[in-house]
Image 1 (cartoon, rainbow, N blue to C red):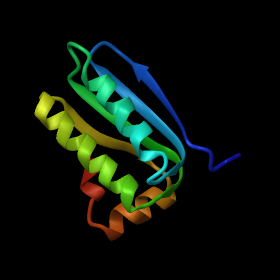
Image 2 (cartoon, one colour; image 1 turned 90 degrees about the horizontal axis):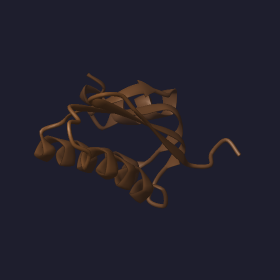
Image 3 (spheres, one colour; image 1 turned 135 degrees about the vertical axis):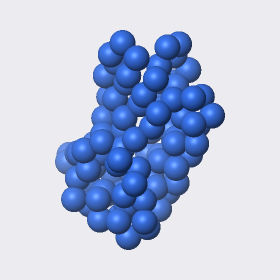
Image 4 (cartoon, rainbow, N blue to C red; image 1 turned 30 degrees about the vertical axis):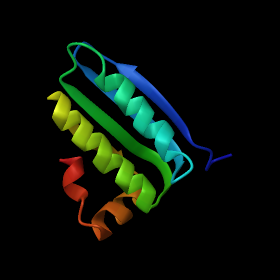
Length: 103
């Protein structure tokens, strides 16, 4: 099913990408946050990218998860950004004024 939530983590030396697909909402948001938190617990990590290229829906709860993940990364001293944006994810982030997460 296209909208089924999935998360995959790809690691490199000091960077990790958390790739998300499907619906990011109140039901799946905790799984995304947990994946980012697990990555941030690793030693030597300097940057984490959340790839939203395959997200089919991002709701307010999903936006909240991205902000909480960004705050957790800042506390850990790790650079955080959102990578590839699907059209639905880009539209939501634009409406709420958070396209800067992708910079």
